[in-house]
Image 1 (cartoon, rainbow over the protein chains, first blue to last red):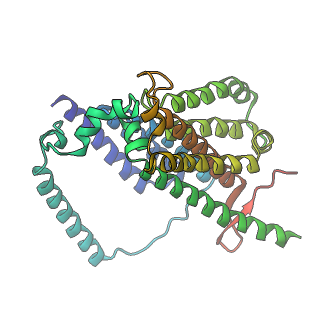
Image 2: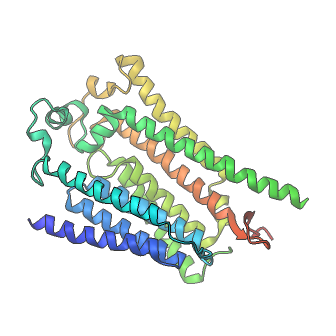
Image 3: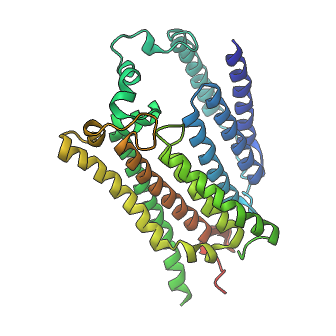
Length: 185
Length: 160
């Protein structure tokens, strides 16, 4: 129960932070509470014994925070006033209730907290990774041996996605800068 | 953006090396300890971001130009693909860890897993260069409000 209690406290903290980030009027405080959510998430990963994810989360969160603060500093959103769509609100509430009901039903069929599914299934591939990972790949970190050896094809896809994203950002943003420069001439 | 105060500049001058070294450590011990190419690359990009924020864009771009970052990005992706094709060519399987199968190294050492180390370095290069490029793109261009209330994007005036 010990780790579960800490996780519940952290989850409440994350939800409150998310609500503040959505509802606050100031763009900078929204970015900062988003950062608090990210750091809380990395602590949650540490509690769940996933230090690899925690390191990635904390590094990416720092970068994201620098990006967001750099982008939002000295600038504010124009608050837009609109009337509430009651029908849309009703549909959202119904969907939320349905989502939570489904989540409760789905989580009841899972194992107890802390007991992995791979222990129950003999033929799960994860058992083979844990048993033979060090011998076959020579990597003491099983996560890295899965990411870059057993499932390296996924990592190649991820690297390609990142590459395409950079390409798109460069193309779109540089095009606008060029058109501005030509207008100046 | 001509940089921040002299306090920030002095601290940055000392700290940037350690952040950079920590990123390299995370990358090359990715197969022994938690970490890996992605996290290390992000940390290396952080050191360049700190440099950009403290000293300004011109200072950083003189040390790591956009063209060099572009080439690092591409060469990281290419190196990762070369590792994959090397496995395909000599092992018959895409991403086969051929070197480890043929010459298994001592366990728990830096060279214990051969192609995983190379892949980590490739991904680290790629992620570091990519995030630096994104940061430069975002810090060069700013969104401002035009007179008629619409948002438009201009290049920051810092060359003058």
